[in-house]
Amino acid sequence: MDKANDRASGLLGRLSGFMRSCLFRVLRMGPIPTHYSFIMDGNRRYAKKVNMGEGAGHRAGFFALVSVLKYCYEVGVKYISIYAFSIDNFKRRPDEVKTIMDLILEKIEGLLEEGSIADQYGVRVYFVGNLKLLDERVRIAAEKVMEATAHNTRCVLLICIAYTSCDEIVNSVRECCKDKLEEIEDKEGGGGGVVVNEHSAIQLVDIEKHMYMGVAPDPDVLLRTSGEKRLSNYQLWQTTHCTLYSPTALWPEISLLHVVWGILKFQRSYAYFEKKKKML
Image (cartoon, rainbow, N blue to C red; front, side):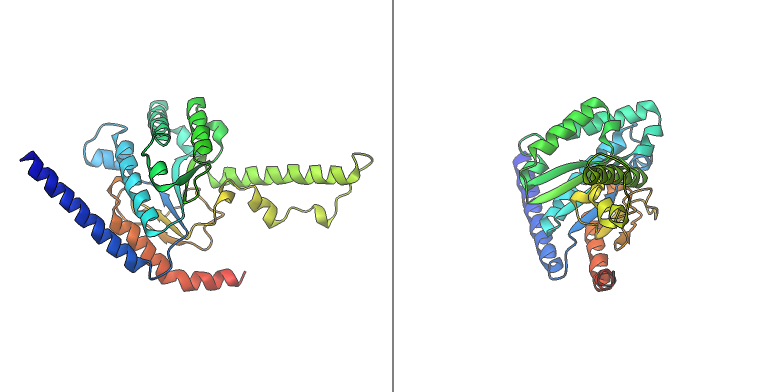
């Protein structure tokens, strides 16, 4: 009986994979987003909804994330970014923050294992944000993953952790000021008064160069689960020309259809956004 069940399960798995492959071929007849971004909202509400223990919702959310990453990479998305942990989330109860950080550490270390999604799909991983705010164990593990996956070139995963757009912009402006001051001092040879002119002014390109998200193009689609239509201080600078999609499903409930629908919405608005970009 067990062997029969295994054969049936294997057959269903192959059939599901074949149907997904056919669906992706149809999607690829239109433009595919280069960068698909996600706000993973609703893990705690999902846990309450299905009477799970505290922290179990975030664990269920991780399994949903793995499926979403596979769908995106298989359809041809090059960059994926996720809002894993906001700076504001540090204000939650200490025991909840610790539970989340322990889970993040576990999953970060899992990315180093053979057969992980980073290994399977050739994913380069970036941890994006104010990493100095992280627990030392998490920060060191994140740095190891970035170093270990630096040679991967097929896909890119940006994990926004200890991140907010306000912090990103302030940090970028601070770094720009440092660069400009050093540039002025070098030109003046370190002597006399410092002369400031139009060439010393901070330009848009200077700010964007120092953005945490500067390692990736701006997102084409931003999907936030749970029906919320707020950006919650996430990629405010980068989402000017971006399709926004807010399905009512909680993050652990996200499915292939939600990912596909986001791509279809992108394709529908593609011509409009391309026209707007050319006007800049």
